[in-house]
Image (cartoon, rainbow over all chains, first blue to last red; front, side, top):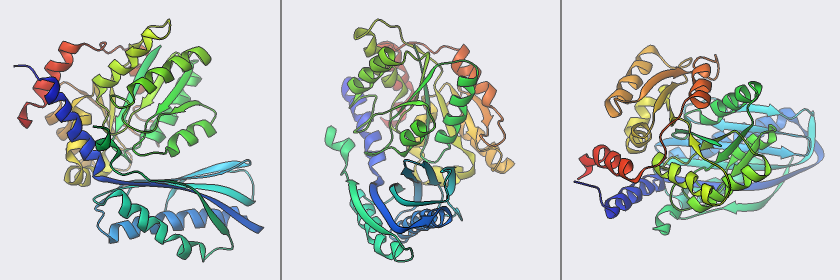
Length: 156
Length: 223
């Protein structure tokens, strides 16, 4: 007995469907502060927004965190943040920002959770932006929105 | 040019391990490039890899073993022409089938004068989250384990002995032919074995008949 091309395609589709059970959303935000924001405050902000995005997804149907990763980028350096478990008390950071403050940086956040769809992750993530930024002396502008719907299945 | 696949579910520690592995291989004098194919449209990992001075390519928009196999082959050709790496480490999305990825890599031989070799397929399994993973995404984790040559039980520094043992038993039950080892990017345990696996060992090239037989055996339960 051999596996036909159709069987192989079915298997592959199954796998893509499994991935599409992962809700995915990525957003790129330009952040500015007239007076400058300290690195300590940037780290607090990143931890805050990442944990809040995990919290709101888990409260609204997600059952497992795939990962939430973030990247602070400026010409001065970068900070990568990561949360892989809803129970994680603090985001893990890889800090390569050798300055004490920034007036402007780009913030990218990629949220992948299991159990809710892409559009739900998008809506939940966007819903926390005003609330989180209200705690900081920083303005923000969404510059890119990587939203996709069931890309894997669409292909087939 | 040798292609090394490092698979694992999201959050399994691939990126942290990959950076350690790349750093170690560079220190041993290897010319390394990294190809990242994340789930979704954007990859934080490739930004991070590039920011750390490594040669990185991001392939977005689908799974590199099928949907964008051509893009992957083109990427390998461009890396060969521009950077000529000895080893390309590929961090595939959670659904890339290793045999399909081998085939996609070998497409590049028709586009440039180079021979593709494959390192054994490595899969990282997060021992700290094994119960949660088996509950929520068992199918994906099983697939990655089935297709691997060497499975590393990762984050052994943070996992309980019971969780490590459970992870080992699970791997052995899914893929009895896979080698099982421990890995910790924190303590460095297992990194030398990863280096040796990538540098010194070879995995077979793509073969239609072999893939068909593997799929038949491994997925027969579906029928």
